[in-house]
Amino acid sequence: SQELEQSPQSLIVQEGKNLTINCTSSKTLYGLYWYKQKYGEGLIFLMMLQKGGEEKSHEKITAKLDEKKQQSSLHITASQPSHAGIYLCGADAGKTSYDKVIFGPGTSLSVIP
Amino acid sequence: DTGVSQNPRHKITKRGQNVTFRCDPISEHNRLYWYRQTLGQGPEFLTYFQNEAQLEKSRLLSDRFSAERPKGSFSTLEIQRTEQGDSAMYLCASSPRSGRSPLHFGNGTRLTVT
Picture 1 (cartoon, one colour):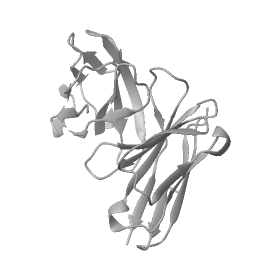
Picture 2 (cartoon, each protein chain N blue to C red):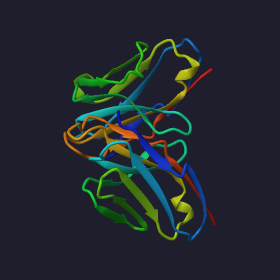
Picture 3 (cartoon, rainbow over the protein chains, first blue to last red):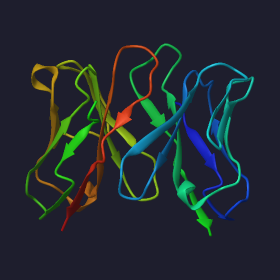
Picture 4 (tube, chains in turn red, green):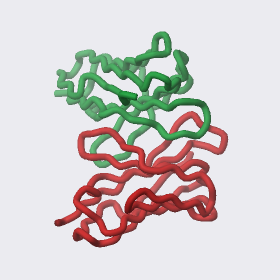
């Protein structure tokens, strides 16, 4: 079965610094999703990637899917305290399986003002 | 679009009691999912429905767990004879159609079994 790994497990950065979170899959990623979660709350959808080499941006957050479609990265530019939270990558369970999304363990981000 | 709604937000129960959670998906979404999340972990898939049909159940879903989605609208997740290991955040999500699209999550129900 497919598994997702995330690195780093946690991250503490000074406000204004850039940072990158990685998500690696044991199998090809056909649909890759990035979510953000505040403690005790639900997941907020950020971006979806499908094609090898695809890159999407929203405000100061950029997500990329590598050409081989086994790794994705989430990059935050000029971090702000509002970026703090847990970032989770999720992936469709299979190439033609739109049935469920599996998730990585998450990366906890703290931004120090 | 009022979002996915889950009730209650918090539930504290004694071991051995039964609990039921409710999820109201986004109205036009025909797929509904239940996940369980423990501290420091990502959500784990439990089950999902397309309309009223329950299409898949995880092995995590023991016989004490049952989920329903009557008439393809809201869904309930019941846990019978709760155990301390059931303590977790139970998340509901919905999606609009078949095919590849992101899940929209509710704020979850946090269950504490004492």
